[in-house]
Amino acid sequence: MKNLRDYGLNSDNKVYVIAEVGINHGGDIGLAKELIDSAVKTGADAVKFQTYTTEKRTHKDSPIFDILKKCELPYDAFSDLKDYTEKCGLEFFSTPFEEEAVDYLESIGCDMYKIASFDVVNMGLLLKIARTKKSVIMSVGMSNLEEIRKAYEILSRETSRISLLHCISAYPTRAKDANLAAIYKLKMEFDCLIGQSDHTDDITIPLYAVAAGAQVIEKHYRIDEAMDCVDAPVSITEREMKEMVDEIRRLEVSLGDGNLGIREAEKQFEWLRRRRD
Image (cartoon, rainbow, N blue to C red; front, side, top):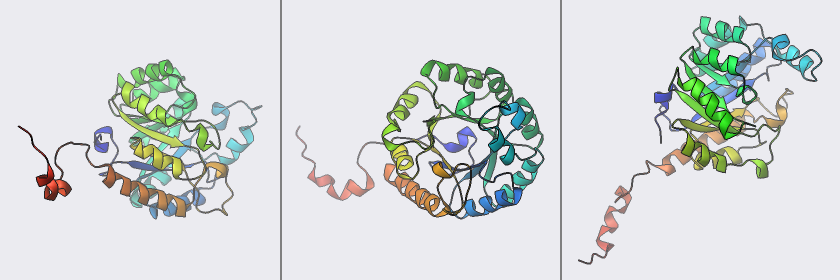
C-alpha cells in the first residue's frame, strides 16, 4: 500500500477517511461546527466542505439553484471553519466550484483541494487547481478513461500528490451499481492513490472498496437520522461513521503489507514444510 503522507494526506493510517459535510450545514456556520464536533468522535481523518457562489456554479433556472443558494456560505466563513477544524484535530479541505473560490482557499492556506466528478472535464478549473501545486483528490464519476487521463495529465504537470476516487454519481447509489471493479482498473492505469467516493446509503460498499484496495474513503455525513439535510439520502450518521472507521482500521491490520514468505505467525509451523532435494 502507498504511504498517505507521500500524497499530502496527514495520517499514519493506511486508509484516509473523509467525512463529507458538503452542504449538509444548510448555510448555517453554527451547524457546520456541530458537524465538525460530531465528526471528531468518529475517528475520521478529515472533514470536507464545498466553497462556491451559487450564481457561478449553476444557472438561475436550474432545479438546484434555490437549494444551493440556501446552503451557500460566504467565502470568509471557511477561514473560521478551517481554524475550528484544525483546533479539533481534523484536516480541513474543500471543493471549490469556481476559480475565485480557489483564490480564496489559497489565501487562507488550504493545503488540499477536492475536484468534484462534474468538473473532471472543466479544463479551466483543473488548471487553476493544478497551479496551486497542492494535493488534489478528484472523484471520477461519469468519466471515461480518456477523460480521466486528460485531467490527470493536467494535474500531474504541477503536482505528484494526486488521489483518484472511483465514484458513481447517482444519489443514492444501489449496491448492484457500485462497480467496485473500477478500483482495480484505476490502480492499473494510474500511479497514485486510489479511493472511493461513496453514495450508497450504508457502510458496506466502502468497506468492500477498502478490501479491493481503496486508500481514501469519502462519505457524506450528518449527525444523526433526525438531522434534516440536503444530502440525507446518501449521508451516514455519527454512529455509522464510527462503525465504518473502526471496521476500516481492522481491515488495515488484516490487509497487512502484502509481502510473501514465512510470516511471524507461521514460524512455529515451518517444520511442516516438505522439502525434496
